[in-house]
Length: 302
Ligand SMILES: NC(=O)c1ccc[n+]([C@@H]2O[C@H](COP(=O)([O-])OP(=O)(O)OC[C@H]3O[C@@H](n4cnc5c(N)ncnc54)[C@H](OP(=O)(O)O)[C@@H]3O)[C@@H](O)[C@H]2O)c1
Image (cartoon, rainbow, N blue to C red; front, side, top):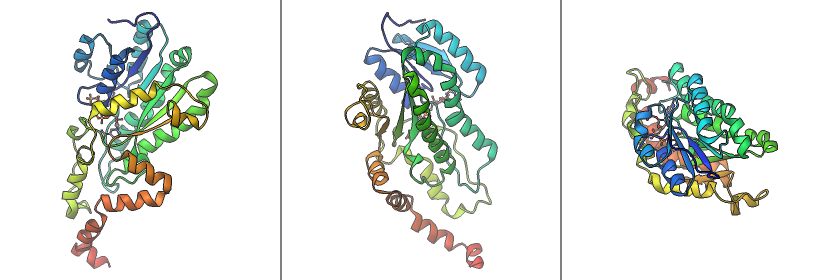
């Protein structure tokens, strides 16, 4: 197993399957001279990264035993000192709020939210030793309505709220927290098992819009994974600056990047109504209201 050289910084990344954001983040930290510990729940997908000299470790972020095993294995690799933890593993969840199944929702929260809490608790000893940095991968959907993505939005908003308070609580220990407000980025997310509309869904008349939405992140201003990773890594390695100067001249607490990130940031800065209005048009609400309004069952209710 590859080991860091003396004095070399270490970074642990979750969810490093080729084609996804985590994989590109590993390549970029490696290129910048850090020792990368790449992890995945299916460790066989990490062989290419191992060949490049990275350490590779099996890790299912929803499994407490797997986290414990990975923690101990990684302590052997890095001597108990971790400079950067990137909580990247995640899953998408596109389904109308009226059609969700709660076990499925719980599984999404396990992967997108509770796993991050568990990883922080498990690795905080190594992070404090390094006075390290935690990077949590959130999404623009945490601040904007993402049609048929209520569960995903809620999970990513939870990551933002959690990270914001975590930042305060870890400050006395010198551990910093950065959140990626990720825009649309090319990845495997669109090839994950898609949910379907139930036969009795109230949205059957706009099934084509639901299907368009399933792959939205891969077809709208989508940034390539390498470009995204290069900027995230570069920004995470910028010097620490005090107070509000930080985001302008140093490592930002909030990293806004990826397709549509600039306009989302701008709208968010101007006010919530701007984002709501943008989403209303982007997600074809006039068309949806017209088509559902033409449904005889809905007409009868009027
Ligand atoms: N792509 C975008 O437009 C976009 C936008 C905003 C935010 N994000 C966020 O970016 C992060 C990376 O996603 P991506 O777009 O690169 O999608 P992706 O290609 O599907 O990558 C997701 C990664 O998470 C892993 N994962 C899922 N459940 C896991 C578990 N229980 N334990 C360990 N690993 C697990 C997946 O492993 P398997 O290959 O084994 O499934 C995969 O490696 C996610 O947090 C996502 O929500 C992406």
